[in-house]
Image (cartoon, rainbow, N blue to C red; front, side, top):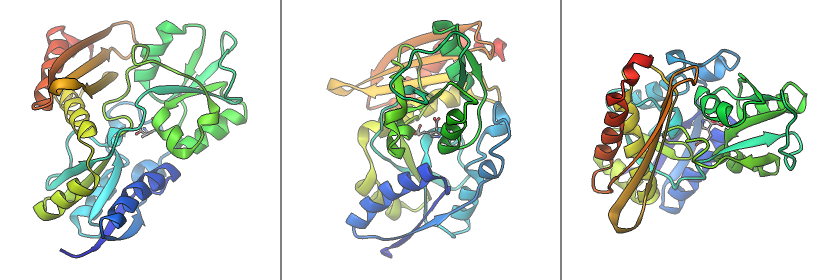
Length: 300
Ligand SMILES: NCc1[nH]cc(CCC(=O)O)c1CC(=O)O
């Protein structure tokens, strides 16, 4: 196998940091790495609302096209931005160790999370709004677009009093000093795959197994497979706010929680189940089944 690999990634600062994490490990494993940045439709349309199905895969399709065309050998993604259905012929070969999956509140001063009633909190995620608005009803949640650095700048300019963002991205960007508080998983379940970096490749068993050996974290893989199966079973065109988090414990156990709400947040269900790390997809599917039996399809 050739020791040269070209990695494709989005060009955002976070995407490049994540790609370098993977690249350094591959260099240690003896590969020579070139990084190629790819402009995606999502990057071009930063200002548009990505809520609903319109946003699915916007950050991914051009990268998948480059993979299929052989312009790159692997792609590094934030798993939560990857649609459950990858382009035909492409697969995930490895999952990097999960960064903290929780959500964080960022304020301009970082240390002071006490906000006045009516404070404007920027988030683009309905999943975050429906979970947080019942706990913190005094705040106004307003949509915000752009990559993380752009969002922080908008807050510093006074457009927002605070932001809710994935702690994983904040940590990787080294912006922890902005974090005013961290929401527990009981307060706000993350998006499926949040905090996990995934490596996508063409079907090529030899490259896949070498990437798996050099990069894969088993706990992240189990969580990713359970959480993505949960999404897949709930999916089918209708985009309700969905949270999911799976964690492997002792004795081969896999524990998972899920949250599904309607888009107004008036109906919100949470449930958890245990399964086996020998069958992460089964656990994700069983948990999804519980929600489907509650009739969430009628919430679409
Ligand atoms: N949707 C954008 C996105 N994709 C990945 C991350 C952060 C890193 C991660 O969750 O792995 C973010 C920013 C955010 O949601 O705050």
